[in-house]
Length: 312
Image (cartoon, rainbow, N blue to C red; front, side, top):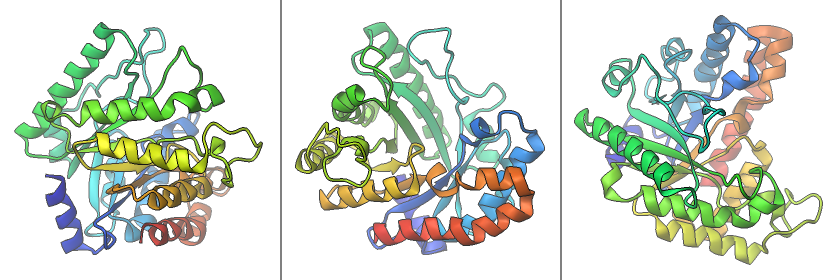
């Protein structure tokens, strides 16, 4: 089903590189940057990003709460990913359990224009059996729902380990390659019905020796070790996978992809959200739609074109 989606994009726009890699603009998490803003501002920001940047991408990821108006302004043949999950997780309950949007179903998302259903979930393979069994069943239900409506299911999994530490820490960087490999191996099993995985970069680039992202000299892995982690995780997956930018800067994400390419990692594309447009948030806050539009036409386009160059 993923292959059919890629062919649709190639036939429609040519916005897939020569390796068949999909370039998706993601912006589901923009709400976190606009916590005190209105629904109108959220919708307008997404509309501007969609209208300008989908000219240079294969597809756009939006949410059905604030993103449906933006869909009307995408490039004619850009694909549509719609998010099915609620943003974040209940901090009053352990395990970072996911939940779905109350008023939406796969049928309703498809009717709203979704070419792809996207769900995000946190996962730690070392959590309790009961906790992880709950997550397994959750994904199985969504996979069955997507199969029933013949729509691709993209699963985004974010690794965590509360016993080790915060995800950007050196301590977590040491275990991250294992945690990412674990979830790629698990959720690529046929029983889940996942068509493609959206995955973390397998290492934290801030702790890879010799990278520009490694600014303080603290090293969790050598460059060769990091490349092997890319290969090991890729070999564990039974389905195609794309990389997500996970909020890092455009420069760090590009360096991550260069390392993936150096390791000959067979990734199928990228979903690049904040790395592409996050610097436009203060521009919008200060100058509104016109200022954001100017920024997107210049810097936003430069960001996504730089990404396309790396992928080729």
